[in-house]
Length: 210
Image (cartoon, helix red, strand yellow):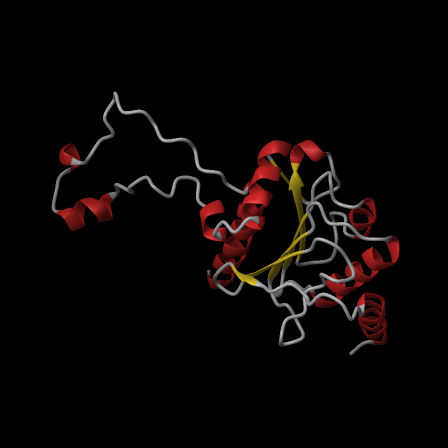
């Protein structure tokens, strides 16, 4: 390991060592992508059993941290990220300023910083979502909503495509339609920032297989 990387890893480990609450458990987003939510540092640093997080989403929306802990988290991210092990950092206007300064956009290869466009932050990807919807989606996961439910734009709508028609042995003209007088169901609550991170990860996987 290069001396610089050893120093960064040591700094992160020392600055973020904390005997109190256990590190957050990872949520599985599928296809090798994990999700970690940080509320407060130094207690919430991800600590996977393998010692390295691999490809992951690090949610720093509404997270709080002092300058020392924020710099240490930034060192931890840069130590673990690479083009083959991307880390997707989620931020918003309520993220601690020290964290925003430690993990801005235009970082090393593999590091993607995402935030709502309305926040006006220095990010790699600005997502079109209001602050209110961003907050509600964040809170929904906090209250126990399945993460999958926040990633699908229309989970209840049946998919009518060629595969469906062939399976059901019906023609295009016989395909089911939504009744004109039937009220449309309310749009599902989607975590647009998290959804974009997952889509980026899937896109990167597809490019490597091409």
